[in-house]
Image 1: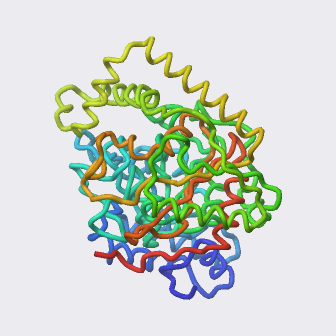
Image 2 (image 1 turned 90 degrees about the horizontal axis):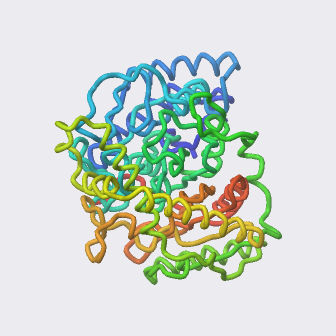
Length: 465
């Protein structure tokens, strides 16, 4: 790759090291792409070009003297606008927030800054990240780069679109029910939801132990470099894990020989569109050709939509309860509706949902005693019309209903990733969903990296009308 605006983090830092390119040039290229494309796709809610240029100049000086802070020093990056960046407002897609600048960096931001990443701005999200598409009354609709009439998915839609168009290289997402993986599947980029607790999150999400932070990038290796920086302990996160992986790149070149993979086309209950399923079938055959042992197998759990919604709506109720009563009329009506449902749910029903969640975790633990990985379609459909919460023909308007492959694995806190695996008959991206047992993130990264090498996917050169 020679065009600066299209280079990966690996390519950029190799060029910095060889002194044939500087972080200033890379940052200017990223800002130029934002200037060209953001009006069409609405990936960024905030861009601070002056700050980015100052960060890039500091990174250039470090590379010039041979003292970079990390392998992502000087790489253009973004933070989702649910996460605090010191000096910038945290609007969260909501009219109930204000322009007051954050006093401190959240852990994710702090680790990226300590590593020298150039933070360009903040990417769009639906209000408080509550749904699987990205639109809000405050910041408008974020559109799919492959077809501007279609949704980007969400809630990390801005980050996924920015990655797809290389409006910056490294992007932060968050995922409490699919919010990293859904937009990655719809936009054709890579994203991983790591094992819960390995990427510290503070302040805690309203969805507490459902919510994971992770990277969204064009390549698996770029995400691994990002995780090497952000998957580190932070004392502010009471939920943070221990025994963090030392090097997320360590397993990326390992062969798949001997890996035991279960392939579930439907999880036993999902209606997947035939052209989507055909692309996923082909991707699974690639994994088989790379040496993995692949068997058709379902984990055997039922549709857990109702159970998840008990947990999800309770989190929404807590969130809305923090908003002054006089401002609640400005909240997205869909969010208000699920918050009201959550507030009316009995504590007994909530505790039963917690037990159902624990039973799912136990089932998946046993399943992974037999299989190293589970692979499924990322989504049963491709991106539908922008500005909607559900497809036009949906019988259930609940956003969770059309993303049945994602939310169960927030309940279990397992590592899961979306890797692009082709295009459906409508020309829109299809994703492969890769799941491993809790703490076995390295296997997810290994399989995705092997598939990426075997079947590299194209990216949109520019937004397509």
